[in-house]
Length: 206
Ligand code: HEM
Image 1 (tube, rainbow, N blue to C red):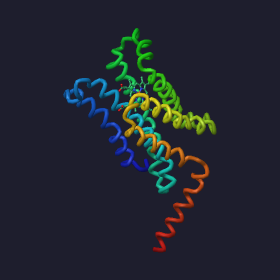
Image 2: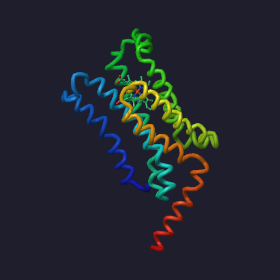
Image 3: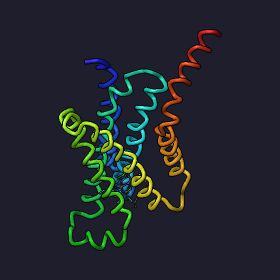
Image 4: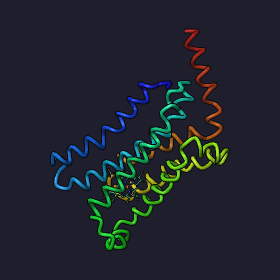
């Protein structure tokens, strides 16, 4: 398999965080409300992994290195694994599996509906991320996987609703998301290879 070490490195880098946070919760070093800290960290982890996944194609176009694409699917699946853990932590530590409270919760935290829509889109993406679905769906597969940008929008809205008072951190994620979106616009995408070739030829001349 090509890029074996690189793939393993990415796997370890993504797997280590939830394990570390669980260990910290076990050691009781996450403060008075470790459940909420876990929900928040896993939610932020989902958003960060989504941004990293979406940056693989532009990075491949900018650098010409195929290694970025080799880990794109794995990163997308990690993003899904994080959102499953985020949802599970919410159900266990905030809802306490008390389903009768779900209606009250949705009234108290309407941003959960936005998060749930994002979760359903990620579920559809993860379920169709295999080669079989790619072959079966043909050109529709690419269109379906543009849903990742909708998830990004939903994730950012979900977070904005939560952090309303402190926009500093949110603006960084939103700014990176906006840049990735611009890089996917056809007129910009078309210019990237030319820009890279120009840079390479001026580096050769120097
Ligand atoms: C059914 C799905 C989801 C549920 C029930 C859910 C629920 C929650 C809850 C309860 C919080 C904590 C709010 C607080 O601190 O008071 C939260 C935070 C967060 N969630 Fe979700 N969420 C879901 C899906 C998502 C998705 C799809 C994303 C990203 C794409 C996401 C990203 C975040 C982020 C970034 C935070 C804020 C973390 C922080 O403040 O550090 N969530 N979510």
